[in-house]
Image (cartoon, rainbow over all chains, first blue to last red):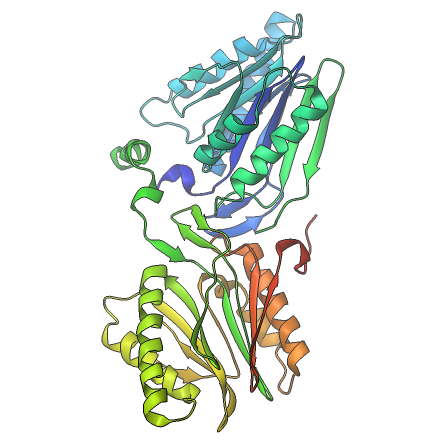
Amino acid sequence: MSILSYNGGCVLAMKGKGCVAIASDRRFGVQTSTLAMDFQRIFEMGPHLYIGLPGLATDTLTVHERLRFRLNLYELRESRKIKPQTFSAMVSNLLYERRFGPYFVEPVIAGLDPVTWEPFISAMDLIGCPNMPEDFVVAGTCAEQLFGMCEALWEPNLEPDDLFETISQALMNAFDRDAISGWGGVVHIIEKDKVTTRMLKTRMD
Amino acid sequence: MACTMNNSISDLLSPDWLTSEHSTGTSIMAVEFNGGVVIGADSRTSTGAYVANRVTDKLTKITNHIYCCRSGSAADTQAIADIVNYHLEFHEVQLGEAPLVKTAASVFQELCYNYRDQLTAGIICAGWDRRHGGQVFNIPLGGMCVRQSFAIGGSGSTYVFGFVDSNFKKGMIKDECVQFVLKTLALAMSRDGSSGGVVRLGIITEDGIERRTVLGNELPRFYED
């Protein structure tokens, strides 16, 4: 039994036209037993910068706290909001520092550049290898299912409303094929002037 | 430290759905009422954490009036049910009339007890016969066989023992039994990762079986924020 599938859970992010979307399920469980249906694994790190941390739940909480600490110091020293690319490098560094005793999380980052408003997504493995594709990133216990759904549904330059539909369907149909993900969903659509957060009504099994 | 690293690496080389056995993780249940039984099951078959089949039928026919609910290894329970089906068909020909539910349960018990080290099978055998009416027999892992007014089984049953113990009443009529089974299975499916999908019901009486399927969005929902 892998330590990355002890608590279960999944996150995905997609690029759209002038926007990005990031979504996750809401289950918190211990192997097959579901303990909560309101677990937060996506965190706001800036007005247009979100990070999802699927994997071992204790490390989800700890990495979020340590990252927030480093980000706060950065923003105090630099007196500006961090760029998503820089933030991604910061997360990668934090994880690689623990190369031989890693945090069991596989981060997914989604955001807009604070100056150019360019959409940005990235994902990494548990020791910080970054991956910055042009389309979508997935992570979690149903990553394979998410890859299949995203590959089938994603197309470039989706408007925010269409991106919402696409990411929601990809997420829900993927975690319905995973015994340890699901039990609710949350989607954040990040645009230049607003961030829309929606809870998904899903099967609770 | 070495073990945990190896876990992540071997996880990448060979995901567990390639090597895990098919298991009907499951929530199953059967309730007696005057005139028959109500049987129910979820519809999820998992291979590790992957849901291999989300519309499984775990209510398997043994005779027209005797069915079994299967939990545990999908392969083991399918093989056992096939063998019991054969024995009962043969017995029915020899007997010249419909076999008794306790006969079917007894055949299940013989297989599950004598091959207990090689099998992972938790079975609920339920049905109706002319002599004793509706009966439910629970045959859990080691191969014991016990008649109960209602029985629950499978990995999801652990979450609902308290619920069934506090909500069961003797002398329920057919529709009350149906609602009892639906609520219980819905609760179990809501908590157990290995149970889910739709609820398959069977109502067995003198007239045979009436099968129903209750879809996910029609199931009772409980407290959620």
